Length: 313
Image (cartoon, rainbow, N blue to C red; front, side, top):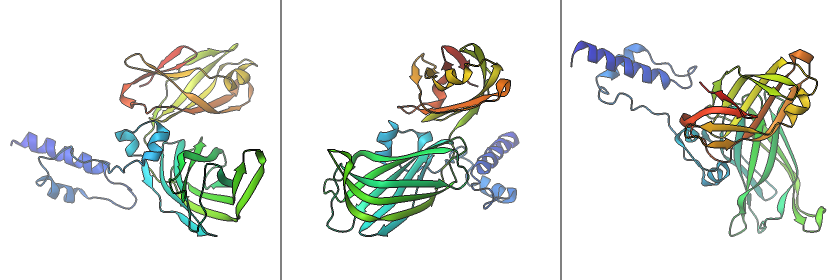
């Protein structure tokens, strides 16, 4: 092996070790250590991988699939609370910079059994670093176990600011059984409150693009300043290029957003979050939504808004 080849391998090893220093504020490798390792792993250069966790099948069904990149965004959670014969546990989270799904398990520790009509009467959530977010809790697919002792629930959080590393505090109130007669007819099974606190911690898998493309909307024009794209969602930030008084309404009602893949396939975005800061010619807006299938980031070519194609690079 000549000198140039040894140097190439050493640089490869050092590069891979640099990528693996996570978290950086706690774990720092010195180059002297890396040089000592080089002789041992000289034929394994490029074999370093970020440890990926197994995505729970219940979350896989929610996302519509799985991928290597998604597996890197999985975090197992250890939060659990027990009281009044119920145990509520945050099992696993998966997400990107703006969207996260958390699998919750509710277990009966007594003779009580659940059915599809069971749920909580009240729900509240607080995030440590932002007040600008939306959240919902709903039954997961096939929510109740065969023996009726476990009920799976899905917490979904959408945020304009990065969701990962936030401290989450959940509060549930009164386990109830809803009547088929309507929401006002419900039976309180267990009266009480349950608090569950945990930190969202998962690897960011989003890519940020700044195309600065301009498209016509209503009687005005908007410039796309930023796109955060992940295999499960998309976040778009725009500003005014040419002002018109109808821009706010047109932006709020915009629903024709797609990804164009390299093979020509168009994948629609289900937009479920929209904001607009009204300030005349300095107005700006954001839009976010989810895909109903896992996106292969390597195959994405363009973002399409109102038939305007914007290359992503």
